[in-house]
Image (cartoon, rainbow, N blue to C red; front, side, top):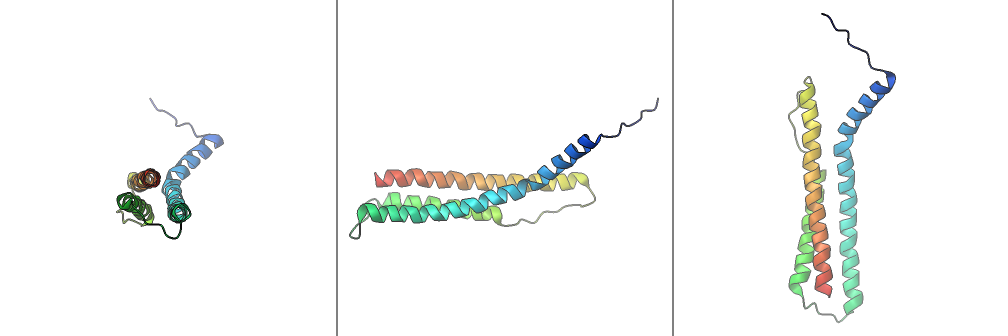
Length: 135
């Protein structure tokens, strides 16, 4: 018994193409998120320093050194992980093997997602610590 393969309709072909394109674009989207995080993290550090200056004035002496040190350490780690997200990693890919290409996109996106998630966690941890160190 022979089976005939049914050809895909134009809509199905386009959906298949868009699906492949969305998988290929995932690492780029995560990189864009990391770039925004770097900008946000640098801006928040400046805003926090300005708030400290406004609250305590010119003659201010920081009494909560541990809170201040913890805040900036967490923000530094957040910035470090966001930057690591942007650093390219070398992968071994067999361009003639479709499964190897799929694995490349999957591993790349997964690595970037983990790094950017760690960055976000450190960043918000720094915000929480900074709030409690001012109060």
